[in-house]
Length: 341
Image 1 (cartoon, rainbow, N blue to C red):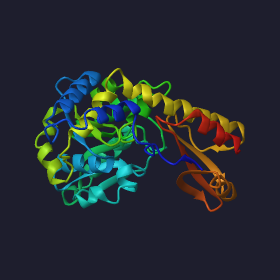
Image 2 (image 1 turned 180 degrees about the horizontal axis):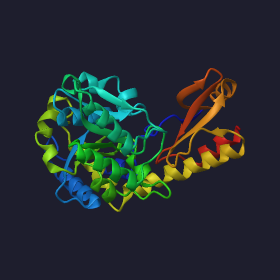
Image 3 (image 1 turned 120 degrees about the vertical axis):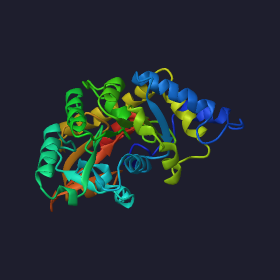
């Protein structure tokens, strides 16, 4: 059985596994105060060209999203997100459980625009009863989105300008950030992203690490008390060095981008190969998530030889399925997948 379900099915990059084995019996300080976290933070800030930034480590994406939102919002505030955003669809109400409403905007292929946010805010404050409502206090976007799409540098800048106008931090979910940065023809780099938002995170779990996400507060004032809030939310790892050493490896010799390129290369072969075989592409994704529209009969046959993701049903007779590659996907598996069509 072939597996193209997700990008966190494999363990970790061999360089990380080798390093973890080498230092297994070392004594390291806890809670992220060790030398590996210190080194990783230094390298991340250098890569972002943000020496003044603050960096914190957490274990996983849902935990990171809910903890950042909890830390940055006042009790009566909510967070604006695309209706397809991960915090609104696949996080089991974690944000709402923390006391904050997700305020949705209809997305286009997973993305929302600066003009949509502007229109939302204009309508909100035009309501004379706005003080009785949940106030938008943050904007959340993903790069890449749940549909594998990415923002341009111009789009990010425009969204950030609207956020600044209304004094709302812009939070970018980077669970798959490596695959966005490695996408062909993108003009978004780590420094560009760091200049275009107030807080974002670099995903490790889906991009070569065993676990872990690195949160970067480009506005250092927003990081105040985050360590304590992180512990309150159950997100403080005692063996913090386990995450630090992984990001130290990922941000040595540009490894994070280098290993991400494999996911893009293999995904493009799948996209082009299935298109040549008459399988309809559902949308144009330049990253490691590729979506296809198939009949119910085709979907049933596909599941006989591979497991892949289900996205949605646009009508009773068809489904949108997802093939997801990773830093570890082999071209042999890709070619075998294509041979079944």
